[in-house]
Every structure is written in structure tokens, then in C-alpha cells.
Image (tube, rainbow, N blue to C red; front, top):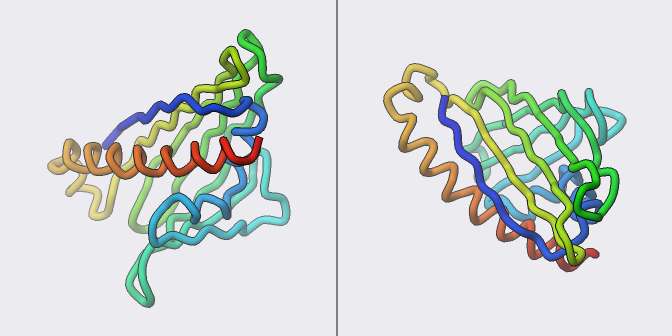
Length: 156
């Protein structure tokens, strides 16, 4: 599996950043060529499911995900419990999972860490291309986290 983590300090309280981060359709605003739709009645908490469709026109792929772990942050002060969300990816192209945490910091800020642990079909390809997949993922998610931070900082 290719594993990478991107960490970014955000100038927004943890609870506000969390609300933006778990607004699944909003991810399409940060990830190029991607639209996200919730596929369950409830968009939050364990069991919520959504699909990220990445591509242009007929060329693309679906990345279905299910929330398997959910703890919203308890507050916005250092020492308050961080938020943590874990999703399982069950698509035909991308498999594995992702975890993100939102940790309150002083001064109305927070630290967001996003970890992906994925394989790409065909799975045997990931074994050989793991460093390249991890590097590409880290670069893509660095840009995604930058866009997320701008969004979260504007929605305090």
C-alpha cells in the first residue's frame, strides 16, 4: 500500500474546520475534476457513505467511501479532544482508507492531518509503483489541503 500524510495548520477553530472537512460534497471544490455525492440518508457519523467521481465526461472513476470511525472535536482549546474521521475506500480503482484528524491549537487555530493508505488497481502495480503513488498522492493532497484551508479560514 502507498501511504502518505499531509499536515497543515489552519487559521480557523477546530470545530469550524471539522464542519468544512466533513461536508463531503464540498471536497469537489478542492479536488480538481472531482464531484462528491452522499449516498446515504445521513451525511455524518459512522455508516455515512459517499462517492467521489473524478474525471472528465465519460473518462473517470468512482471512489466510493464509507465512514468507519467518527469523533468530532470536543472544542477549540488546546487540550480539547481532537476530531478524528476514518473512511474505507471500496472502489474498483482505489482501495484502502483515509484518516484525518483536527487538533485544536492556541489562538483559534487547528492542525489538520490527512493520511491515505491506498492501493490502485491493478493492485500488483501498487507494489512496484508504491513510491510514485505515495509521492503523487502527497503532492495532490498538499494542493487539496491548501484549498481546504482557504475554504475553512473563510468560514469561521
